[in-house]
Image (tube, rainbow, N blue to C red; front, side, top):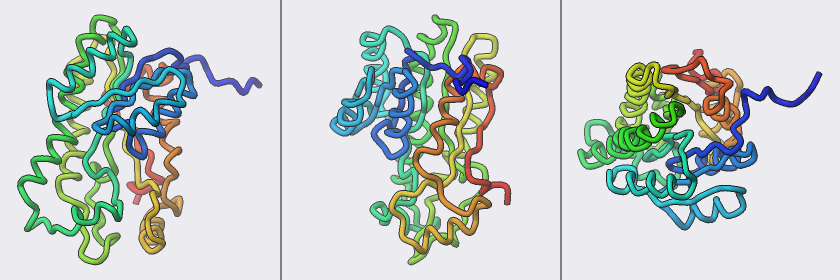
Amino acid sequence: MSSKPSPTFDVRDRVVILTGGAGLLGAEYARALAEAGARPVIADLNLNRARRIAAPLSGAVAVRVDVTDPASVRRMVSRVLRTCGRIDGLVNNAALDPKFDPRNAPRHVISFEDFPLDLWNRGLAVDLTGMFLCAQAVAPSMLRQGKGVIVNVSSTYGLVGPDQRLYENGAYKPVVYSVTKSAVLGFTRYLAAYWAGKGLRVNSLTPGGVYNGHDDEFVRRYSSRTPLGRMADKSEYCGALLFLLSDASSYMTGANLVVDGGWTAW
């Protein structure tokens, strides 16, 4: 039996915009897409880091974008169309505080009762409004092509409430993260239904916790809550993303693909 993947998994030459492309998972997605022959557009607020990630990747493009700024999003899309000629996929991956990272600890020590309105509004702007603006901006090009794929990245905390027992020293998973990641699922279903029959497919990818230098105690507590008994490696979501961007998922729209080591099974 041939070990070659089915042609339906082929994403060669497809132009895919990755927002938050310079982040931990965004960079991994970009590498996976490039290895599969796609043209990843690494779109991030940090242009220098986006360029460093793009440099060794065949066909990759780096572009600066502030997903909360409509003008910045429009400029990004215009540049991609000028440079690449088309847009086949959008991965709405940009998010504020997408993981519990000790370096971001100050954001995690604020209880719900004291959570500031400015952080709430900032989280809404990046995690949710950013997806709205990016989807809105790429839609005209995809509709003209009669084909396109959007993947909105959610979280297990968009499906279930955060287990605050995981955290210590007065830390909390911020309220705005769970609220926006829940809203992502509704946004996905709305767009899938809205573009029904237009050739545009919209799905969500829901990853679980990924290891990023967490301390041993946090890893132990997290792993004990997961049937597979560990956190994910940063590479372990790439297969799911490639599946959603390829024709292998051609009969999926409005769906949510959960890759969480079984976290939400319990």
